[in-house]
Image 1 (cartoon, rainbow, N blue to C red):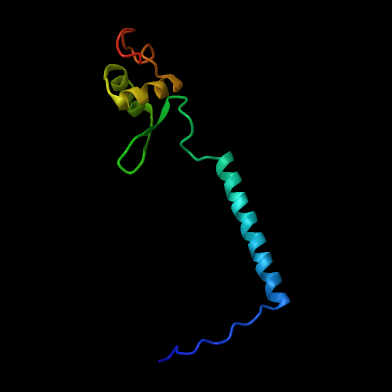
Image 2: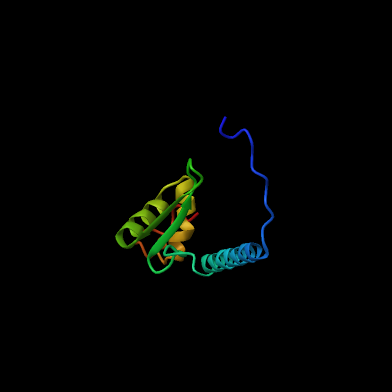
Length: 114
């Protein structure tokens, strides 16, 4: 039986304790820095604006991010303003924020202005 007897635990020395504390302080500083960076700079898919839309859609894995610009965004917004359903309802406000409202898309004023 190779592990029948466990060796006696040893107390850590002052130098080891100082290294442990320094390592924990560095870890806390790094985690705080990452947290601040994530809060200040959330990423490339920011808010919907300037012809680009970013929509958070419900998904089986919790959520899906849809980000589109240009012709793709215009086509999605046209569909959102002419369709019904949950995805269309979630997309319409983002289209308005991007400046892709029904008038900008050449759609009649009536319809799903939701």
